Amino acid sequence: MSDKRTAIKIFEEMATLLELQGANPFKSRAYTKAARELQQHEGQLSEWIVSGAIHSMKGIGKSLKEKLIELVETGKIREHEELRASFPDGLMEMLKIPGLGPKKARTLYQELGLSNIDDLEEACLTDKLLPLPGFAKKTQEKLLQGIEQLRMYQGRFRLNQALPYAKQIIADLRAMPDVEQVELGGSLRRWKETVKDLDFVVATRNPEAVMKAFVEHPLKEHIIAHGPTKSSITLSSGLNVDLRTVKPEQYPYALMHFTGSKEHNTTMRKRAKDRDMKLNEYGLFRGDTLVECSSETEIFAALGLHFVPPELREDRDEFEWAEKADHPPLVELSDIQGIFHAHSTYSDGSATLREMAEATRDMGLTYLGITDHSRTAYYAGGLSIEEIQQQHKEIDELNQEWKDFQIFKGIESDILGDGSLDYPEEILAQFDFIIASVHSQFNMSSEEMTARIIRAIEHPSTTMLGHPTGRLLLNRDSYPIDIYKIVDAAIANNVIIEINSNPYRLDLDWRILGYGREKGLVVSVNPDAHTIPGISDIQYGVGIARKGGLSAKHVFNTYDLPTIREKLG
Image (cartoon, rainbow, N blue to C red):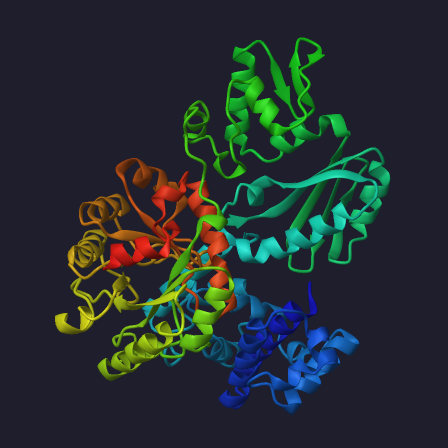
């Protein structure tokens, strides 16, 4: 793990540990702010210290700088180690339960001595929490649901957690002289929204040397298995990594086998059998004769198919897709021309409007649709009517500076309980576009929630529907909703549904995109960026759009600036 990521992780954990300790809340918040500040900057901690850049970072005072220097020099922070040792390990695990924050965890630890998930579960089942202030019967029920949910998701990792490790390991493997070819396989290559492990396939004539280096990788915490053609390690994050080595002539077949889902591979083998061939991880055979293929593309062609992108290999409709000669290519990150759904310091973003615009422009994009929170989201600094006027004035001034870039005036309007939008109609009319999103009252029935969202979709001011199911990956399931009715309503009202690219959301789910694609749904791949680095989260959303089989024509923000001006005009 890079020293920057290590520092962020330690600071975030220190903030939590200080809350558990009951320390001054300002001290805890200082670590949280410092972690966010580190996320804002490109590069590594060691580089910032050497160059002196660390001294100009906001919110990182003398004490925190000394701790960061200590981390670089010793690999740890003594105060963090002491804080960590003052609490049982199980207490930190308890904090992963949805709805259980440090304050409640401290109460449970101090009053009942609860220091792990199993003990907490037993205490909830036997009503031991009820005498504590703030712990009603409903609280116990929610904690039990959270424990069940945590166990369901245990051992899974979001894309943003797994991808940095995958990139580092594959770069290290590619640098080895004995590695002729290497590629990521498995569910991460298929761009599943959460993964259990990482899979790599290597072509080599010296597997022993490759395996020896792999099990000694600097990120390794434990060796699970060390064999001549397959080895497995566990990283410090808990993520398992598998490596398989094959002969160079076997590589394309092995890569295909270890990429496809089990169901996809079954259909591929059946397709080969129907053509009097046999397909497995070692090759494609006609009788005992190898059908020589130098790439996955050639294997698909031998089976009468166009190349199936890895994201689609789930045995859904990819075979029908691959049989068509005229199917448009899947959307690429390079197709994205601009972004919508970004926050600034006007609400809960960490960068100013100008900083967000300049960062977007520096990425080669030509427009930014700014959408700070509306006033009902007071907890996120929702904008008053006066603040809207101030922001619009600043947008007008900034737009005078650029001819090749434009900021569009937007708002992320809360969908209120009855389905109406925030602000009077005359205020809504002042925006170029509006993203309508649910941020509260999640406990409605499916019928109520569906009707609420459809009413917002039918509002003439609504341009886009934000994170339509409200899920938070590995943390919170979708609220009850008939998503197919929502998609139908969006199409009928010419409302765009966003693919929220925040790796905690990735909502709209890729499994629904095929339905929307066939019906004529238009999506927008939106970063929901609250920081400058958050703009780059569009990579995750583009991957989900590809997994749903979408081409550029299905994605609103692949349009160029003149077209967007016309569409929003």
